[in-house]
Amino acid sequence: MPRQGVPAGPGEPDWAAAVAAVRGLGPESRVLLICHVNPDGDALGSMLGFGLALRRLGVRQLQATFPGPPEVPEPLRWLPGLELLVPATEAYPDPELVVCFDAASESRLGELAGRLAEPGPVLVLDHHASNTGFGDVQLVAPAAAATSVVVEELLARLDIALDAEIAACLYVALTTDTGSFRFDATTPAVHQLAARLLATGIRPGDISRQVFDTRPFGAVRLFGEVLGRARLEPPAAAGHGLVWTYATQDDLARHDQRPYVLEALIDSVRCTAEADVACVLKQVGPAQWAVSLRSKGAVDVSRVAAALGGGGHRFAAGFTGSGDADAVVDRIRAELDSALVTS
Ligand code: AMP
Ligand code: MN
Ligand code: MN
Image (cartoon, rainbow, N blue to C red; front, side, top):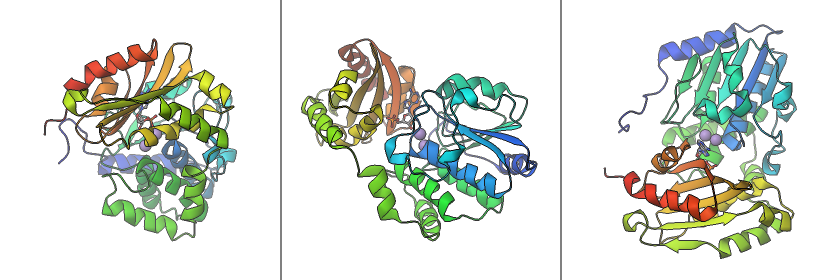
């Protein structure tokens, strides 16, 4: 049952408009692909997979970019199509088509949000129920497990065949957002998509090892320290429990690690049996934290995140918090009770 207020997903006119926008491109049309800040496997994989497909169509003037520092997390630094990436400051000033991936709102596009006002149409591919409806053509499928599901359907409608490079990108996106096929969004259709991707010859073992199971020894030590200070609060969320920890920029510096290594931390925290809600605060400035929230089902963490200025999905959400870590957790605790799932 779709939740109340959740858009149903793209209709035939939306698909037709998206197909027409892509079919209208010539070899010299300038196309700008953008995705959300601090891109994850779904954002980058969907964007680069689509970029490679456009290149197969003969589009030559093609750029991909994201806001913030132009740094690709090490586990994704082998993705096919990385050569399409340019720093946000170097993106075409006058693209004829902008395609936006995995971003629920303009605020997730940072300094690139201005690009949405370009004269060329803006095509939005996303799967957040909270998508604000920005852009000109919305392919927003809240039931989809990943933005890459939407990408693959668009490619099929454009008669662009999957090859191993496109498939590697889309497979990374799909496995990232389904937790390697562990989450409830993993429908039969998700496995059928995975089968089509694997049929191109990509190697799931190699891909998973690079994306999920490889990190520097310094990161292993850093995780030990940060997990060692995790706190369990059984009374939080009306007794469903909260577990949380934090990592500072000083922690990163002491272990000589880049911020991306902390993205995997939430997965080690959220396995805590005694807590429905897990939270990791990652320091991004003197008194600023990128906060990750996860739920096992009793709490809709997207409501907590939205109340605190962010967004996301029911089981995985985030926001940027200001102040010291305790103050940010105070604010989360205060929102948990009103985000309990009742049906
Ligand atoms: P993360 O914890 O960074 O893996 O993010 C989990 C989910 O929360 C993602 O799917 C994002 O859509 C969403 N999210 C994370 N941070 C923010 C933010 N600052 N604003 C809006 N949504 C966010
Ligand atoms: Mn994402
Ligand atoms: Mn996604």
